[in-house]
Image 1 (tube, rainbow, N blue to C red):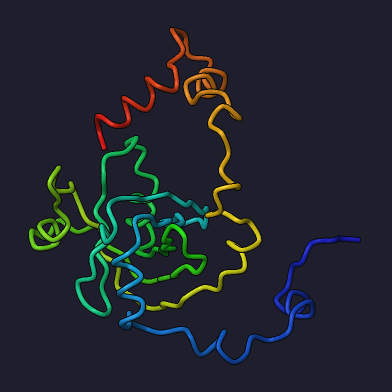
Image 2 (image 1 turned 180 degrees about the vertical axis):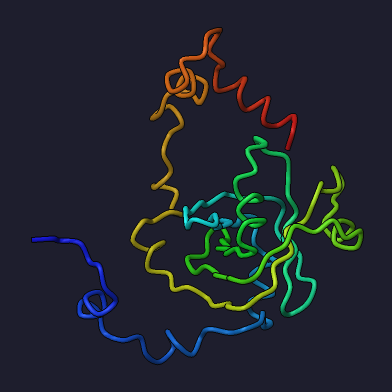
Amino acid sequence: MSTAITSLAALRALYPEPAGRAVLKQLDHLDAHCARFVALSPFVVLATSDAEGRADASPRGGLPGFVKLADARTLLLPDAPGNNRLDSLENIIGTGRAGLLFMIPGINETLRVNGKAVLSLDPADIAACADERRAPALVIRLSVEEAFLHCAKAFMRSGLWKPQSQVARDALPSMGRMMADQTSMAGPVETQEETERRYAASL
């Protein structure tokens, strides 16, 4: 007998229907509270999928407020230098959609925003997202369709922001060692210090 859930009816049989605040909190725009959350956030997870439904989630970071609020229904996410795989950007071209999960260090609630997305080269969008280091090559322009604050339970369970939850870097091998093992690339293995210096040069 299959143990997988394969229908909405079977899924809903395990959980009660959402009600009250869980339903009412969803907005089709960014109100003052959402705007403040975006302004304080230095980190966001960008969720996309390709045309076949294969999902991807990519971390994006900058100084607090690096994601700009163009208006109550539009967010601007600058694309910073990365590994040039362009997974998220290719997915946006393929589907025209994206989701964002905003986090603020020390705050257990998060902000979720979903909507239509385009890769913008509009000079005004580029200028809005430029900082003292550079202007982005492009900007992800998200037209907000859904926005809601997400409860703190996941962060409370994980204790993510608690000092005692911090893991020493040497709990894992260096990034260079892990990449060498995974890729079997020949040559000297980059130390963690060398990796971080290389990262810092292209922030």
